[in-house]
Length: 113
Length: 110
Figure (tube, rainbow over the protein chains, first blue to last red):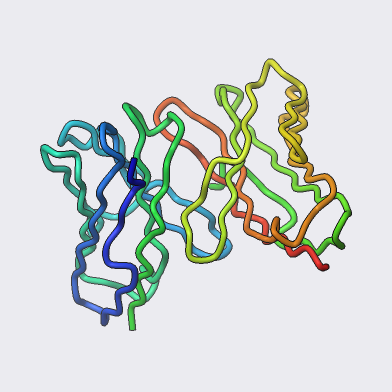
């Protein structure tokens, strides 16, 4: 079985721009969660999507949004980028919930200049 | 507010030594405590996990010790090897998500 695939691996953007990240979960997994990883902060939960619906949300501003398609693939969007948004964004899939065993992708490294 | 506190931030151990990473939590509703291992350029991968009704779980060279009354748990890596050099995250499961510690960067010196 293929693992969780995230694209692109690296992104460089400037302040004020917006960005879209993509995640393809493991086949059969219906839950996709997104995390922000920064040095010193660890992994911070952004949100979870299940069956095309946002089921849970972390404590991030509305500039961070996402969606899930009928094939369980998910996208995350960050609008009006700020310098502090520079981070590794990780996607994790699980069969049916964000609090089950998580399988992570390799992440998208976003740099905001 | 960090729900799971992890220490140390970094750790250097000689090959063959014991690596110990500690985590503490406050929410007694957490019911599952995994450890994740992350190599550079990769996402975290589940290493070992424990439930709060068990005080210790061992898998090969990796052991979790769990102290429910103190709300603390730790990862012990016996006979540490250079290949164990990675970042380790503890986590705790809540009702809807996992809460992660801030990570420990482990370097094992040959």
